Image 1 (cartoon, rainbow, N blue to C red):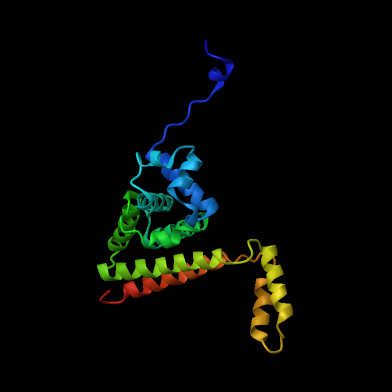
Image 2 (image 1 turned 120 degrees about the vertical axis):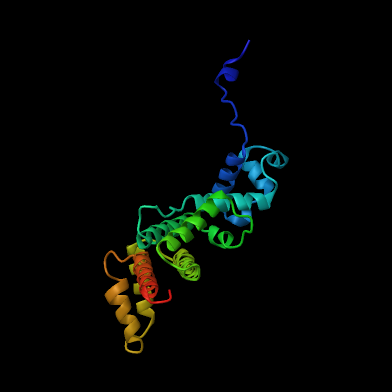
Length: 226
């Protein structure tokens, strides 16, 4: 006869490739990509590390898989959107994904076995530019400069020592107290008239720079021969 404990016990969720990769993604987010080992992942899932090999080929396969999961979070351009709107939406979405997964930027550019979400993302970006009249060379240039900006800005934002406008003002004030304003007047002016203003958010700089890039690409695209 089944005991009360037997009746109330919840069945263990069976392992699957999706579950393994999702657990690996969460582990990397919380503990960093350096913590991601087969043994540690097995502990997180409550199984022996060897059980994972029924669903993934090894750590490299996991790294490829979680990289593809991050790409799946990025909004791909819509067929209905004009190229600038599509690239803007994609860039904003990509930066947010990189901030959610701080470890991802180093992997997203270094893995050599792209998954379906990664391929769909790249193909959609290139296709949107080609359909807008970009040559294949200009599409490559545009893709490169936009992504360099996205990844660079995200990394810079991750390295900031503050997260809120209040914290930013405190950091700015601390810097201001350490420098002679008469020797560095322009820096002092930027701090007092910009960084210490209520509501200042460094993240707002992203869309300003992004629009400069998109507008510059648009102007270049209009020139004969492009």
